[in-house]
Length: 114
Image 1 (cartoon, helix red, strand yellow):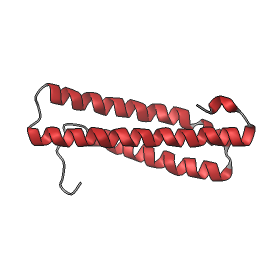
Image 2 (image 1 turned 180 degrees about the vertical axis):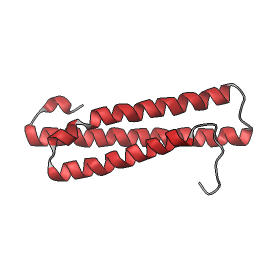
Image 3 (image 1 turned 90 degrees about the horizontal axis):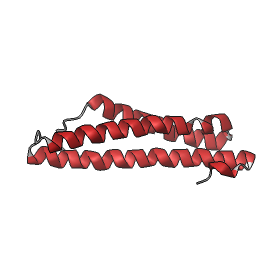
């Protein structure tokens, strides 16, 4: 986004979400390369935190829109933010899938495959 956005959401929560997703993706790649089953199994719990942050940001954004606290331009920025955080949440889900594949490759355990 070329211009600064105005969102009625905590920047701290958004930054936490971004940092957690970045860390999880980097760890999933490293886990795949190393075949580290213990680390791969930790992704489900980490994804729960990301899901919590995602839901929290969505709720506060939707509440701001519903209360009419946003101008038209700000509402457009909120919609963009909702798309961005949805994509970040899906990226974290893909990192979990990589961890599940590591468990399958290393142990042949199919219960992690969905």
